[in-house]
Length: 116
Image 1: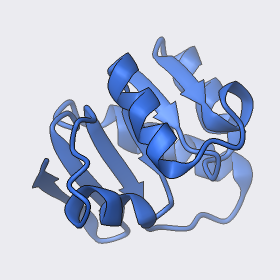
Image 2: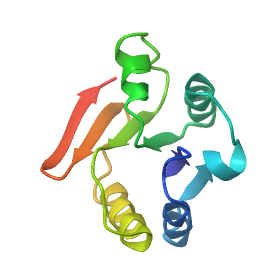
Image 3: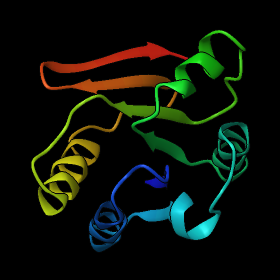
Image 4: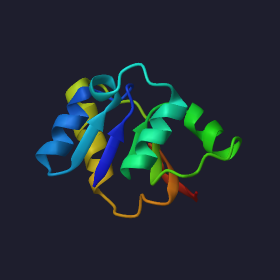
């Protein structure tokens, strides 16, 4: 899986996903300071799923019509610590293979997917 982690995703997620064999870029280290539209552009050009905690991407996709990305996974959950967060997010990302083509919202009560 090719993934672009937004800057609000803990660095440990990148490490964990790489350990599992995934191709991961992290905005914080690979393109710091990028604006949301630039992040979507990077994800689209490189064929990466965007993983974020930022609800603003929903506005860009559904209100502004920017839908050229592979998929967006919005986490709306909190975890107790950094290492637990990294493991939790990695487990969710690897739990399914239907992220592409969807705006997915991950909540404690489940995952909601809307086609892009």
